Length: 139
Image (cartoon, rainbow, N blue to C red):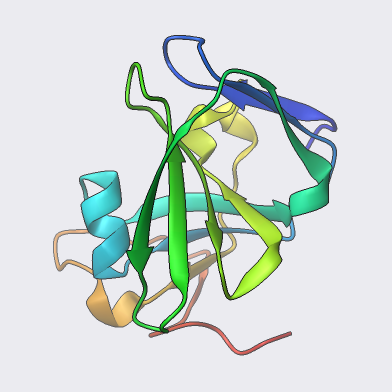
């Protein structure tokens, strides 16, 4: 991925920049991500939180208790509703960016798919990604 990379919401009210290489790019099939994305899974790239900075605007946040017991906080544009990024209380050192918010989303290339045990039957998973029925074990 070209560094730094940048992105923002559909209306341009929120902008960000990231100087860190993604740790992993993934699709998550958990039910919470299905609700958040409005479809069968959510896509994301995980980065070190200290490599990410907002450069314009202030997102709105929504918090939800995850199955793990951690609090998941999702950020979105309060004007156009575009999903932007998320954090978890389970690890405050990472931030998860939605690739649809990237200025160049073609740089997104998923490596893994998680919570595949909750995947919808009509969702077509890539044969090129590693699959995990839940959260993958720590590396």
